[in-house]
Length: 261
Image 1 (tube, one colour):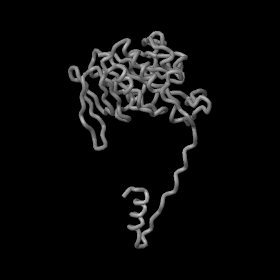
Image 2 (cartoon, rainbow, N blue to C red):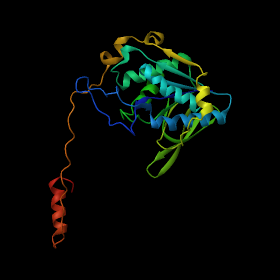
Image 3 (cartoon, one colour):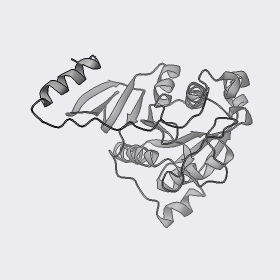
Image 4 (cartoon, rainbow, N blue to C red):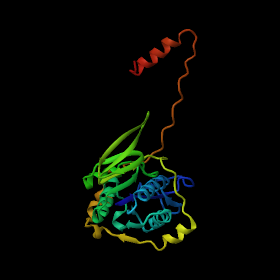
């Protein structure tokens, strides 16, 4: 079985306060510490566990980004991924979630995959739209918020997190699966893993390698735009109702005023 896991390099959420460039309205990534998205560490750990359980399988780490994203992919290799692919091209700068999904889907389609793992969302953009976009471009079913996954024959079965616990959902393979945050304990690279990562296959692809035109990605192909940046409004102080004998009526009036009653 060939398993892909899509990962992203992000500003370190533990040491960096994310800021937007007022001119480009993009997240500022220069001069800050960049790391493998913490959520992706859990996701790739889930993929490694499944690969090892199945046996006779290959795990490929895939990312789209600048050349600096190599470091995040190297960490995936040190954790246990078999090889890595980075899609990098100057024209990708400013790509939105749809373009990102388009590029990742094209890279996966180029090789073929039985299962694609993604985190539910990244810790910088928080759009949560890329996994669904990949599934749409590839014409595959998607299983979401998985806290556990098993393979039986030609179908994937997950325990999907819901507010009251979980429910069991299944679909035919190939499929896209998103892993619920915190569902798997992250694997930390050992020195042996770090050294071994240097010898594992690592390839880079450009847009021309994937047959994607520059007008479909970057700012030129973006269908979503940030129109303005502003300060978040301060939260107004709440209203305290003291029970002086009329509390019930005061609360009822308050709810009626805002058409909540």
